[in-house]
Length: 77
Image (cartoon, rainbow, N blue to C red; front, top):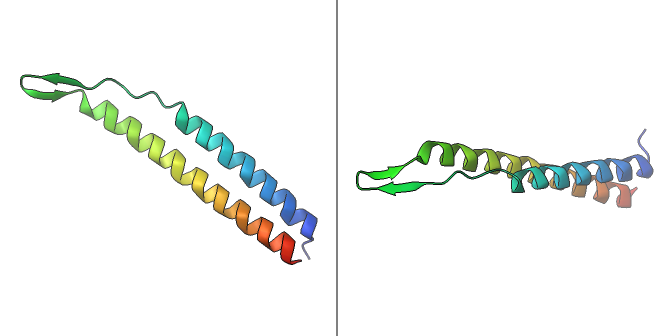
């Protein structure tokens, strides 16, 4: 049905996807948060950027996990 080589290529594909997602996560621009006498100003854009980076990290980690599983299956076959 599936060969070891197909799982090996699947592992490579997901590893490349994980690397690309982590690179995109590193390039997320974090806006400056200013402190004023009334409190902290500009927190909403900062929180949105952190959420975007966290989402990209989550997808990258999932891709790396799938890559590892594919690699383990290819070794077992």
